Image (tube, rainbow, N blue to C red):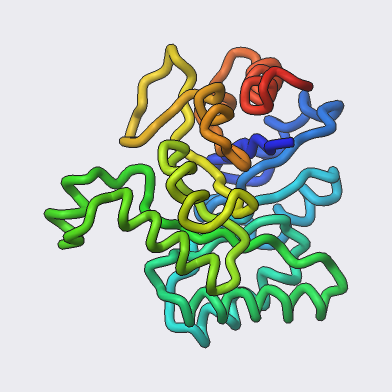
Length: 239
């Protein structure tokens, strides 16, 4: 089944845990913890979520010299999270270092190591920004495909990408290579600060490996039902 990660874009742990109370009977629950929440609460929020058997995607997008990334990843590998991220633009040696660090940390803590996902190009990045600000001379598709292939060869289990890029990534790497897709919006919603967006149903058709959804769920009048509807859509209507 394709997970639906609820992006917990809240300021602190009490707000998160209160939001999650109605989800206590949901057996498929997975969440994304990003920078804002983790930098405030640290490992304690991960422990609180794992104590509720919630799968955790810790999205810190590590991007530094290989040694620093390896040491940071070693700490993250001990937290019993299921997914974590690096920026693929850090290069192949950095991604390899992250993989080593995660495995070392997990072994030390006696837990399963997280799957390593590499960010290709952020879903907020437009084609114009890619060319005019980053001075990348190839197309968005070529950049994403190249970075995904490099990440796979460097030990990553998958990438973070727009669902619009899933097929080209699978063609460049393999259909076993996981594509986790942010930039998901329901048909009635605005795209906010995202540029390359799709609906959950479209993501399913584009062979997603899982999606990240924030405001559509967290700001819904009925977050649990919205989550279930999205989960069904991204899994082809099967619950």
